[in-house]
Image 1: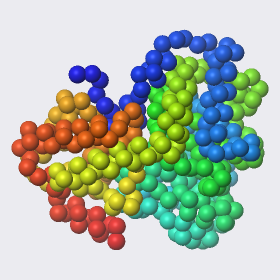
Image 2: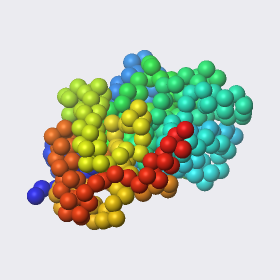
Image 3: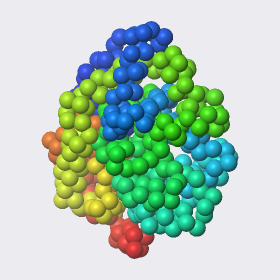
Image 4: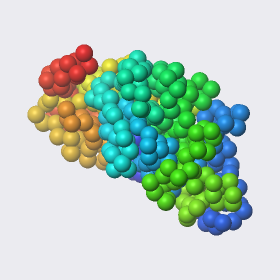
Length: 383
């Protein structure tokens, strides 16, 4: 058996040509690599829909969380105040990041089941004129919920505040067009829906919002403004870039465009989700979320109530069949997650469902229905 499929929200399964692109070494100061960085940034700004030159792209070394911290630390000034919209681990992580940086913030925490809505964001902004920035998570992968960023953006723009979007697990597959959704900056990563490999993230920022952010950053290396100025001056990253990862990402961008861009990538992931969810429900599994909030990125399922079900064994059985799934990240109920992104199609997802059914049989589980208490808790919290 070859390498297993990664049913995770990233790192994910990549194309062979993406892996192959990493076989050559690049000099980080060389003109050829500077041209690669320029192409990467130009393509990402175009992917965001900017044709007027109002936005810039700033790649940042490290994991996605490094880039989220860089965006927050650079865009939220020391005297500012952020409203964090949380409905899972990554919204709460943004709040914790602000706390560690010493930035003032307030929190709307919706729990695991529901999205923050535009009207409640509007009320919070009306009630607290000190709030300068709103932080929204595009797809909260701890639950799999796709948040309504368009209506949130409308509420924020109507009140003259600044919106920052963590689109780590959605950009490239879910529309985030700057002409349709007003935001001042968004952040994503190489190893998500564009299907590259881990090693850097990127901030796409409105030039008029980034220009006055000089001196805001709490960190030398996580300063988006300074990184941008370095790229403008020399075309070079300020510190050693992940050269092989950049080469792989350019190939991933080529494949993304060849597939048909954001609409086509999103359609494939949506079909992956629909096929997988339908099959898992036939086995008795139930999703954490109602259908209207299911993202095409990753789906959270309740653990079965059957006494023979053990997630650790289920994980190993699935891995032996060629599929690596993800443990749950919820505190209220026991759960696990199945990703829909990466170099996979509907036929692979049908194989995932077959593997899940076979694994249940091997465990002596004849029904994957969740505990009644979990369903009751979902109903109570979603009410």
